[in-house]
Length: 71
Image (cartoon, rainbow, N blue to C red; front, side):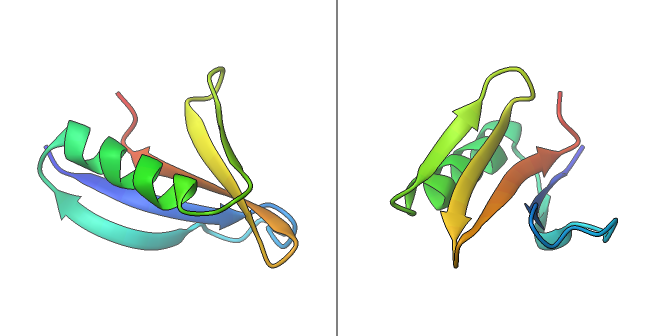
């Protein structure tokens, strides 16, 4: 199984498909680690344990970043 990383701008979502950031990552823990590193590279960031989705604020907008599929 391989994993992908997606980013979604919540302020400008308008039903658009999330942006594909990376794909064909063969290790789930590597994909999760990359998502965490990217999110924490922003000053304003966090993690929603209910949805298991990381978020960060950039350019005045909140973005969600996550792996797919989520297992």
